[in-house]
Length: 79
Image (cartoon, rainbow, N blue to C red; front, side):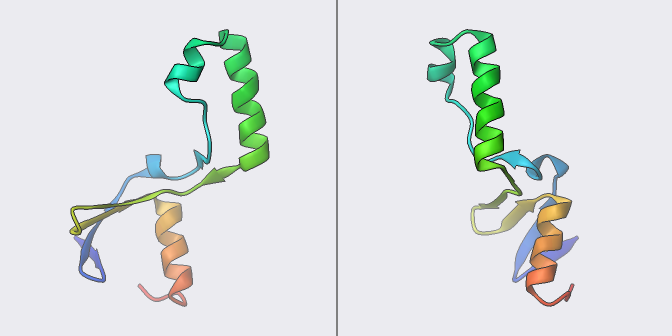
């Protein structure tokens, strides 16, 4: 088990490379599938992607491998 500042670290690759912005489910229902695809492509180009982090109940940190690499780089490469 890996810990970071007292938090148990859970690595989940699905946390990496997430779109920063996507249309809501309500908005999707108002649009055709083609319009949703076009809007998602525009949002991805405009806003890009991010590596997400979640802290669960102050005990666990969930992030992807790329996100964990960002943490290590911010700490000067310390593990």
